[in-house]
Length: 212
Length: 213
Image (cartoon, rainbow over all chains, first blue to last red):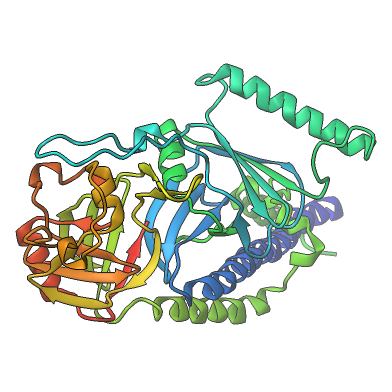
């Protein structure tokens, strides 16, 4: 009898205890998401107050937004991403230089013929973007789409880790540089490269909240 | 002692309760890193102020949207949009910068780059029947020498009926080559068809924001 009572109390109360703990966890998760979203909004407000184009890399939502004055001008989807080297992603990063592109020589305009020009299709599909302070973003495709560059990037990542381990002995780049790899479609990579300008500001977040 | 029936009822209720609670709610497995991060542990009571702060920040951001019309130019796809709030008032096919280069003859290593500038701008001037004052590169590109007489630089009827300046000599204007609309062919200016140019001229005033990406 007593045994049945204890079983009853245990089975009745234990889920309730776990539930309340889960509720707290859920609140924590929600709160963490809101804190992160607020942090990103605060950083965006510092950029949106000036007449400029800026990027918002939202790793949680898998998108890169091109924005100005808080207005979304364009969004690029990210297939996958991973952060190779950890570090704080808070604050504003500035692009050192846009991906290089070969520029044709200008010729005199003619009635109905389009002279040589740089178009979206001429932009690179795989490139590294160096930002200040200490951020490197690699943009490229998946191993299946581009096996050789993928193997090369893996080797680079491995070498960087070795360099981290041995410090100054085989140092290749600043150990404090955060590295993020973005896997995107070739079209997205080209469009992103097109949009970039030298000194372009970037903010990064991992929001889980729905965007308008 | 409890009567046996009461004990059985309590046990039965407990089992029913256990069965009705979803498995995911009974196990802490599957929680995200954020929950385990001590810096993010927040009691449920603090969520409301955070959400209120979130709403305030979003409102502040939305208040930065221009109150009237504004222009967006997509140089990759050669489109100009006139917008008001979230509504698109006009979508126009444009021509933007070719991205080509031309060496400056008297400055070795220096060159003109014919890109449409990207960034945040505003309309600074509105002209009707604008004349084009040809810059040096226009002559050099055609293989002719740059005239010393400034009057020889002025050409009428090249830029269309209207021109809207947005700084550093860049304009939104018309074109003699409508078949090239939608392509990257200009020296940095933004070309539109006659009809679209007329509409943009009507909607855009001095100070109208222009965002080019």
